[in-house]
Length: 82
Image (cartoon, rainbow, N blue to C red):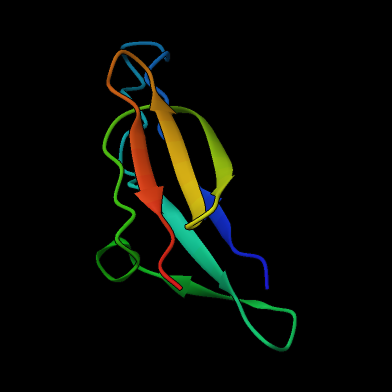
């Protein structure tokens, strides 16, 4: 079952519009019936502040890890619990 993680936020907008910064990421967990269910950040453990620029799943011998790159901030690494 595949999961989907969506990162967000965009700060490069006109001042009169304001920043788009309400997202902390969204995890959609894959289910047995080929659909997805929403999982909040507190439950998933993936809670990202800042402007997400890129994300990549990194397979390791101990399981998959999610690397999240943020604009002008440190990268974050999350390990998937089985």
